[in-house]
Amino acid sequence: MDSISKQQTGISSATLESMRLTGQMMSLGVATLIIHLFIGDGNIIPSTHPLFMRSVKLLFIIFSALCFSGIFVSWVRGKRNY
Image (tube, helix red, strand yellow):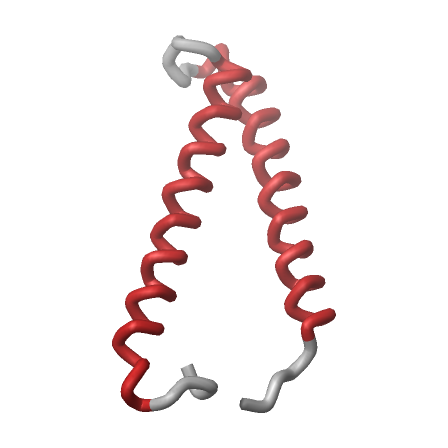
């Protein structure tokens, strides 16, 4: 937000929030898909806890990889002075 002019703060804030909400929706979709692939249409009950825990571990791996790739891309880009 520091790299834009005062006249464009509204547009940039709206864009930032739209991207943030899109990321939240996509991550919820991925989490739902992975849990469904492991458990299926059944409920999460004590007998399905091992499958649920495997799906959660896979989700942590997937989202950690996405997070570290974002960190790497941001690091490679470097600091920009506008």
